[in-house]
Image (cartoon, rainbow, N blue to C red):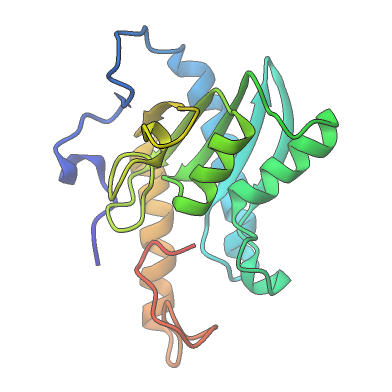
Length: 196
């Protein structure tokens, strides 16, 4: 099982990933406030027996979408926290382009979620724990800044990384300790420890 701690990857706890030109870091307190809400949403996923990942979409100072992992409950492989939050934001704004939006998520997004953010033209992505196996915003690969795509996300990783990582690690520790349970017991397939 790969570690989710930012320290294990040689990165500082709060990292600007878009290295194309220097930018000032956003106000850490605002990002941390929204990440704490994402952690609360992740707890809802955990209470439902889902992998604890939470996400929200913010435009200006307004939360326009929230979500938590629900693929098992909804029998929907696309029901990741980010996808649910993006759908809710699109409905709230009556717009599929989420210009000037920031997505906050407790775990570095997978390829599907990152590609959806790029397609929606999300401006910023802020995530907590790194996902070295499936993260598509700089860890395993980097769709957030791919030259093959027509948009790039301003990406900030490692916000409240220790809390986000601890929530995931504790979930999987408890799951592995239950007889007949494990990361793959609910759907019959093998997943990495950070699969959503």
